[in-house]
Amino acid sequence: MSENTVTLERIGGTAVITLNRPHRRNALDDSIKVAMGGIVRDVREDRSVTAVVLTGAGGHFCAGADLGDGGGDAERGFYVRDLLLDHHGWFAELTDLEKPVISAVDGVATGAGLSVALAADFIIASDRARFVSSFARVGFVPDLSLMYVLPRRVGLTRAKEIVFSAREILAEEAVAIGLAEAVVPADRLRDAAIDFAQRFANAPTHVLGMAKRIMNRTFETDRHALLQLEAAVQGLCAASQYNAEAVRRFFSKEAPLFPGTQRLF
Image 1 (cartoon, rainbow, N blue to C red):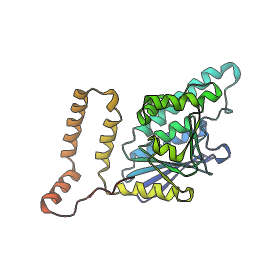
Image 2 (tube, one colour):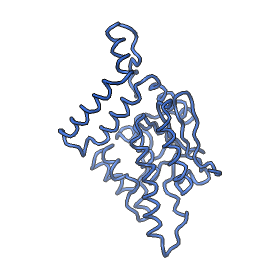
Image 3 (cartoon, helix red, strand yellow):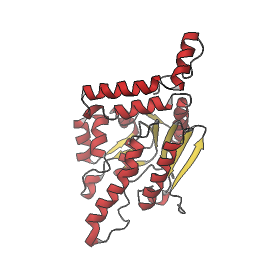
Image 4 (cartoon, helix red, strand yellow):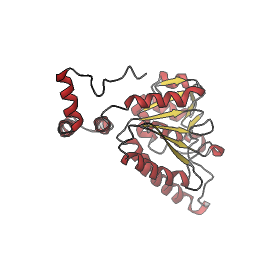
C-alpha cells in the first residue's frame, strides 16, 4: 500500500503489526482492510514468526470504523454491509491465527477498534488507554464480532452493561473486569508487549496454535466434539519432530526445549 496504513516489523520471532492512520486515530478504512488481509496472511504463513503484537500509531489504538469514508447516502446501507463483510475476512483470520497475539492498547480502542483489540489472545493496556463500545452513541449495534467476543471476555451481563452504557472504561477497570490483562506506563507499552510476545520464542508454535483454535470454539462445541478434536490434534503432536525431541530430552533429563514461562501477568 502506498499510504502504508498498516506496517509490519520483525523483532526476532515477533511480528509487530501497527495500524498507521494517526491523523484519524487509526480508524478502519478500505486501505487498512486491504493491508491487513495481506499482512495477516503473511504472518500466518511465515513459520519463523512465533508471536504477534498488534498496536496503533500516534498514541491511539483504533477509533473504530471511519464513518466519513465512502458510501453515498442512497447506497449507504449496502456500503456499510459490504464494508463489514470485507473487514470480517481479515478479522476472522487474525482471531484464529495459530500463534499468540497480544494487543498493545494505548489511547482509544472504541467501536470496531474495541473489537480489533479483542481479536487478540491477550490485551496489555497503557495507563491512558480507554475502551468504549461507542456504537449506541451513533445509533448502531456493535459490529465486527463485538457481540460475540465481548461476552466471552467479561460475561454476558457485564457485556450488556458496556454496550448499553457506551461509557469509557479506563485501564485499571479494564483489568478488574477481565477486558485486559495488564496495565503498564504508556512509554513502556510497546516494549512490554514485545517482551511478553518473545516469551513464546521457543514454544511449540503449532501446539499453541492448535490449542488456541480449539479453545476459541469451546463455548459452542459440545464435549464429545471437543474430545474428538483434542484426540485428532494430539495425534498430530505425537507425530511431530518437536514432540520427539521434547520427549527425548525429558527422559534424558536434559533442559527442555520450552521450559514454560513465569506467570504471564
